[in-house]
Length: 460
Image (cartoon, rainbow, N blue to C red; front, side):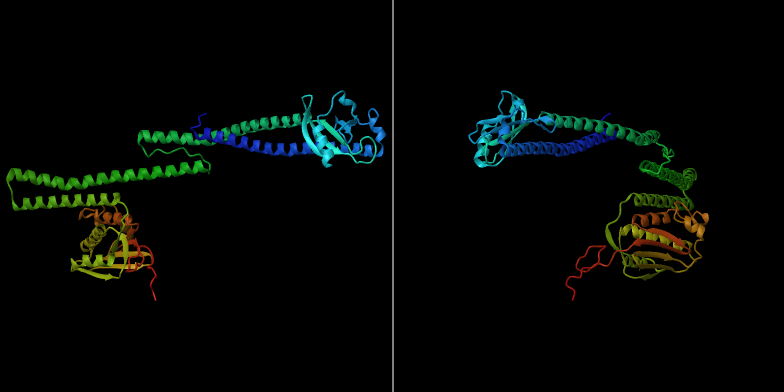
C-alpha cells in the first residue's frame, strides 16, 4: 500500500495516532502503578522498622533471640539489622547469613540527625530498597542506635517491566487493528471514487459529455460528488449542443447572403454591371458585414470578464437620445459597474429593435432609473409588443419576431450577453425591453470607493 494514496496515508496516520495514544496511556499507567508500588514498599519497610523499634524499646532482650526479627514483608522476606549508637551490630535477621546490609553511611547520618531515610542500593548484585530509622534512647543495647530494614525490588522491577511489555504489545496490537479497520473502511469508501475516476477517464478519452458517471445511491460525500459531476456534465452537454446550434445557425445565416452575392457576381461576370446588380452587391456585402460584427460582438461578450469601471446610465441614455430625435427619455441619476461601450451597444440594439417593430412613426421611450439595489435600463415603443411565448425566446440567437427575416437575429442575444456579463439580466414584457443591473451606491465627491456608502468625515 503506497503512502502516495489517500488510503495509504490514512492508514498510516490512523496507526501512528493509535500507537501514540496507547503509548501515552501506557506511560500514564506506568507512572501511577510504579509510584503506587514504590509507595507500598516504602510503607511496608516503615511499618517493619516501627515494629522493630517498639520491640527494642519494650523488650530489648528479645532482639537477640534467633528468629525474633524474621517476618514476611508484603509477601517477601525482609532483612533487618539493629545497630547501636556507635554503628555496631546488635541483632539481625537470620536470612542475611554472613552478609551485612550496605547501610553503614546511611546509619551514621540517621543516628547523627535523628531523621529516617530511604535509599536504593544493591545486596550481592540484587537491587534492594533500604530504610533506616533511629531508635529511641531508652534502654537496651540498641538504645540511641538505628534499625535498618531492606527488601528486594526485583519483583517490583519485574512487574514494571511486564507492564512496559504489555503497553508496547497493546500499542502495537491496537495500531495494527486500527490500521486494518481504516484500510477496510477506506477501501469500501474509496471504491466508488475509483469507479468515478474510471468513468471520468472514459469521458475524457471519448470527449463525450453525454456520458454519465455511476451513481452510488447513497447520500454521502461521494454520492453528492457523483451527482454534482453528472450535473456538470449535463451543463457541458447543453453548452456543447448550444454551440453546435450556434454554428449551424450562423452557417445558415451566412449561406443566404453568400448565395445571393455569388449569384450577383456571376450575373455581373456574364452580363456586365447594372445599377440594380451593384445595389444588390452592396446590400449583400453590408448584410454580411453586419452579421460578422454581431457574431464577433456575441463572442466577445460571452468571453469577456466582469467590468470594473463606473458608468452613469442617465448620461449614457442622454448620449444615445441626442443622436435619435425619435427617442424620449426619462432618467434619474444611477450608476453601475460596467463596460460603457458594451452598454451603449446594447441600448442602441434595443432602440433599433423598437424602431423596427414598434408602431410606424411612434415614439420610443428610454428610461434609466433605480429600483432598490437595481439599476433599470428599459426601452418601450408604441407597438403591441411580444406575446408571452415569444418574450421567452426573444433573446435567443437568430430568433426573429414573425420570422420575417429582418435583421441578423443577434441584436437581442447581444443585449442578454451584455446584461449577464454585468451580473444582471434582460427580459421583455410586451413592448418594453428591460436590462436590470446591480446598482452602485452613492459615492462622496471626495473620492469614495464605488459600492460603499459615502464617508461622513467632516460632516457638520
